[in-house]
Length: 281
Image (tube, rainbow, N blue to C red; front, side, top):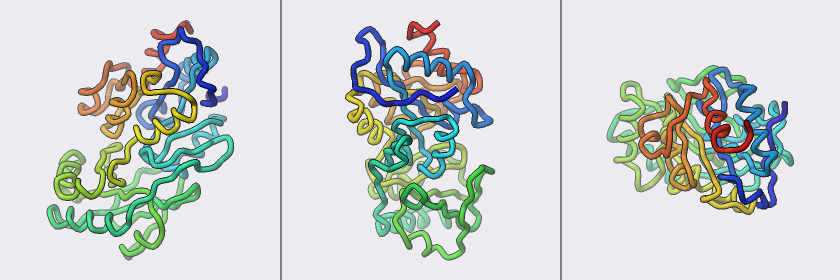
């Protein structure tokens, strides 16, 4: 069963409670095995059949998202790279892509390391085929896509990048986010995107940035939007959207700003809410 597109003229029936369904991927739309349940897929397709639009909003860069969208038959817009990339899946092209100021990123890293000591580093290169570079000591999750290992840190700055990932040998995720923000928050954005995934981004960039651009292309607004997520990087999206729904096992920081908390990603949390709000039962 194909995933619903996001193409829309902005003319959804006025009776719908929301005209745009924005879903994070990991920990939200995707179950732990990186699949979408039959129930959740059916709920999204039913809502879109009524005239609403569904859009994926993920921290993953396009290279780490495309295989999922392709498998789903997803042909509309996807917001990737923490809002830095708006990707048209049907046309297989980037509509927008924001890169980091590499000198500023290097300065930010130096300031953070001056406070907490050496970091383990990775980065995502810009573009649809952008490589994921992984340095010594950086821990990656097993996945379907390859990474390119590097030893010389100067390789990070050899070509445009969308974001830098940092890990610390002793600090946990929340402590590292706090330390990085205190040391370099005036230079770069700092977000926690998932377990072991602390990211440095261009200052001011967030999922809300990319989602607002994509919504505008669809003729939709923040008030038209219900957003689903599970991690602190979803906070700006929740603040922008008309309604924010956190998954049951979401990070406490996101739950604190959510309008409601639903079931977990493994228990059809998105479908639970859509079936209640929309006439699709």
